[in-house]
Length: 444
Image (cartoon, rainbow, N blue to C red; front, top):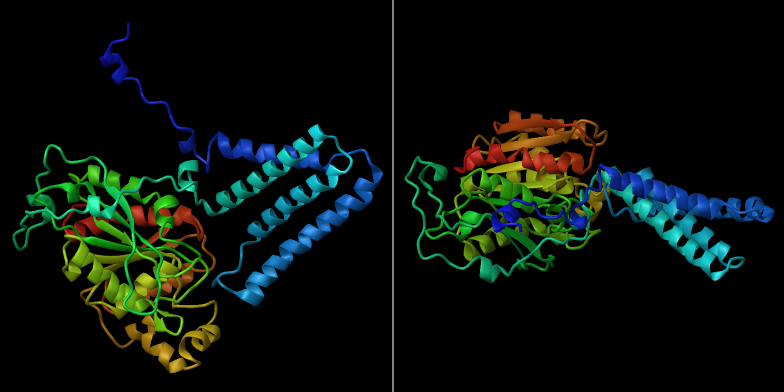
């Protein structure tokens, strides 16, 4: 008979939701299955299939993929970067799989029809896997499905009657003694953060580390974290695996970690107000006033400027750089991961026309690179992270870093292997946590 002690030593069965999607057997099996399904959909002995159906279908799907690229990148232009070619290739192949399955329908029995539909689904899943591999976005099925547990913020953030006192000149980590019953994990909550203007944000995500559950409660630093565009506040939770990484940091630091607030600086997936106050939306006011006011009123945190950091990836990285320059009394430091050199809708002309009514001088008055030419920021700290293989933004990130240095900022440069994708964005933030902890009293 097995004793309970022996059973306690048996590791839990791994969940299929935690199988890796970026390496190991799963992506190999998915790709091989998609290739086999595609071969099945292509194969038949009928001569007209090869002379008419396949060429016409392939040409039509190729034209569709090109048409989508032209419609998005030339006509609509919702994103500052063009769609990656691999995305259009996988789109064309996925649609081709569906078209061939439909074309086989007429000459097949029910069992063959079912197999054709199943094969088309495999080709589609293979396409999704290929896109995921390209962006390195979801490392597990759990993250792809957004299966992170959330709790009510009212339950997670109940006021504490007593707080930890940190003497002047001391660090929180040196005076903090965690209670014996401190949780081993933080909490994640979804909550609205209202706007004082006509800007209408989507719900924010809030991470509270284990130490926030303690009484007396330490006044923790705040990290305001922004997604890229297109994107949502959940991107840092699902693709960025934020909770797992912050819980790991907290375990190594007596339950201490920043309170992380992930607000919505876009308004919708395809919008880009550029973190400015403009006809596109007053998102600078939202990030520099509304969000900090809400956090200080709703949560027990360190309200001092030196305890507040703004960070983000891609468009969110650009925003973090902007707010460090435009709202230095709010944010004492920033982490710009793969951001652009300036707020942009793709090019300067479109940006000035849409957000400034064609007034180039109005753009220069708020553009951070222009502000840095005439204003020094000796009390601001920052980190600029770039992908070594990011052909579009690596040099722009370097330009931002050097401009910050000239303006007197205490700024660090970090270059990571990878392009404009999650192979840079995830470690870009995680690797910055010790730097941030040292500067906010949590320990490196």
